[in-house]
Length: 320
Image 1 (tube, rainbow, N blue to C red):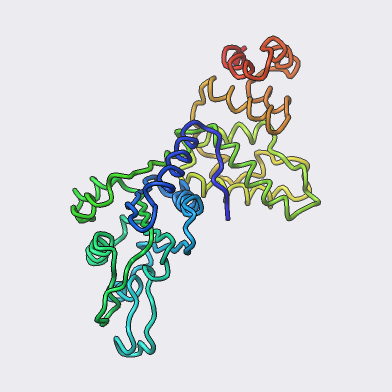
Image 2: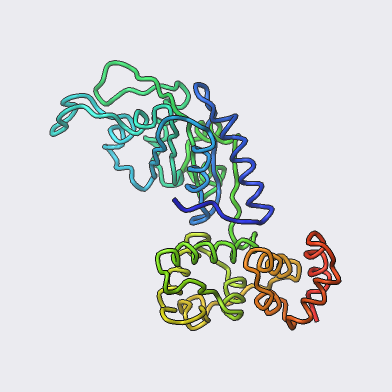
């Protein structure tokens, strides 16, 4: 499983809130539904899986995406069916709610859910029990509920895409995951993380890194696809850098090379440079990012004193 990676204050807040809700709000037998909000590709399922693990529940993590629901078939998908419930049904089978018993049911892409399954889920979450298609008895829904949407709930209600009662039921324990454009410090952390994962299976390319120009472009690109897009770009770059000793601009996909870039403030550059120094040990790359000579960086590091003063010193002296 991909890790939830980042060092920005924003992602640290997400992790802290996720762990708090996992231990408190998701506690069985009386869990409160938790909502994860964030744009496409930002890592909502990663947060959901981490919450499931942090909750310590013994059951499984069961994801159900709104894009997977089929009109007329969703009751079976969610709640299961009894023997012979419909033509060709065969033996009875449990649905997602029963599969998630003592675990976590992750109801993803809420913006794609039709109103009928929304109403059915609203009742199941409220009453904490389900009934299989054509079944006579009710079965306890003993699981934690996580919802996710890339569109704010109030907007979905206004557009007629979300039941108001469901919005009231799930709209209190909310974790908002910001896009990468709002936490640029995480861009290179993620890029290097995904690169390390790929290099672990390619011993002949161990030590491959992004050169200063590629690093600059990764940092200033807007990343509309967020974390998912970073992973895909790194995969492309690593494949095209086969046999090279570094990943340069020529190895990045053309949409990244040709895209307009975002201005990056000095404080963000300094924070990224600090990460390069601490985790990559690369004074050369840190200096290149700041637009200064490595000898100048060495002088400022000595002037800054202990490690806690390095970031402050870099921020105050990041321009030449």
